Image 1 (cartoon, rainbow, N blue to C red):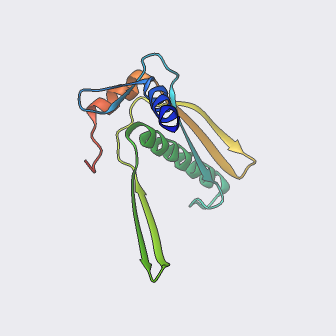
Image 2 (image 1 turned 90 degrees about the horizontal axis):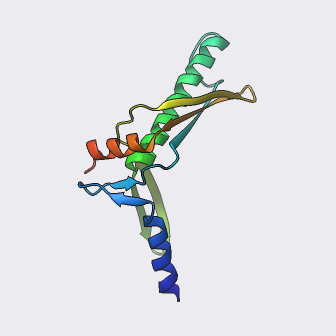
Length: 141
């Protein structure tokens, strides 16, 4: 029974995808646009005036949204290292990185949240996502 559930879940997850010739997953043709969201705190931004800090927060939130899109499109590389001795964890380290090309992303909104941070939402059409996946290989491959 457990095996049947796993097979059904795998089939359901793969149902919306096909594979490109280079092995990268391809999203189903007319799906909703892929969205990336980024946040940036205003107070910690460099700048001499509140207006400069606001502009820097907008730029930082937009870049964070681009990173989110790149991670969704191309994936993220996660490396982990755990040192254990005498049944005790001495150190546990994780490192993540994202590499990818994002093109034709549209700004859906740039919104101040409680006057403390900015939220940026970007989106890319599924056809663009498939083109980016087909034309770009992450740096770690």
